[in-house]
Length: 103
Length: 60
Image (cartoon, rainbow over all chains, first blue to last red; front, side, top):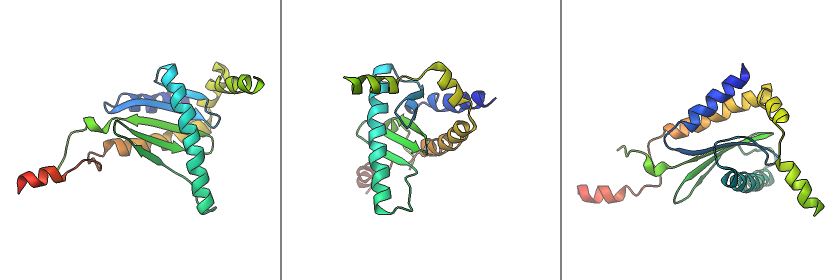
């Protein structure tokens, strides 16, 4: 039952037209789920795991009672959204350029 | 060399372990919580990086 639930959540993200990639990795950078090709997947999981480690350290050093809860990285081409947890990371790459302009 | 091998092993996760993780309560809770946050961001239609001033200038 829970596996079905996980699959549903994952599909909802990968089916979103602005989403270019979804990865779920554990603290060691091992991929649990991903819709990226293996080369790109390895790149993202390795590099984002390092980035999150650094960001978590940064937040903790500033205030040890604080904790990182969400990281958005905006680049010229994408926006990478990362939700960290004790054991897992959800990484979603979106292309916001494609979004309609609302004024 | 040993370090490299160890790292490689760390990267590979067996199908059994993967299944176990996916069906664990902790993982399901994490996915439930984290996908909700991301979906809210995806539903935002305002692009905070866009240079809206160009359009304003044209209006004036």
